[in-house]
Length: 159
Image 1: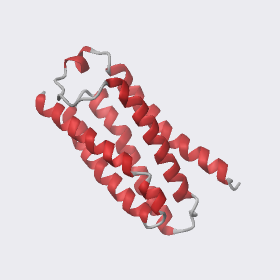
Image 2: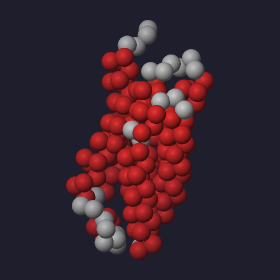
Image 3: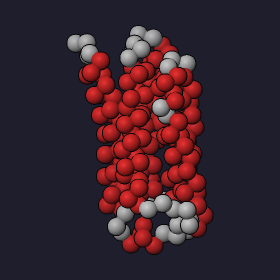
Image 4: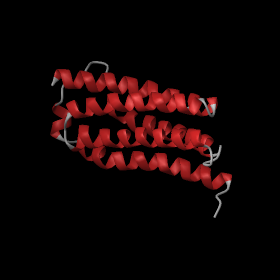
């Protein structure tokens, strides 16, 4: 069965939002805990309420980007490679919540988010070869993850 464009678009968005949902299973229960409340945080730590809408928006942009690449055809090797790289960065994204919040480890979260940052960069480069629009849609993502990396590093150092 061949998927139409609307089906691919919906699946692309759902895949990315699902990554956020999976991550939230580890993040949401940890936010109200004493562990998170007692973590020393840098002065530039944003309000906690900002994270959910930011991530929902970023996952939506990632979904559009994924759709643009998938739409170029799985028969093309460069598309398949780009999608694999995208999948790797998405796994790092989910894993960060598991490590930082689930295992309560800012150190392992930091290791993961650095690897995620490089995987996002590789995704942007691989997507750019196929669709500059798809690549540019990931710029807010890498900027946010850059900020999140600084937050993660600061929390690790302070604690």
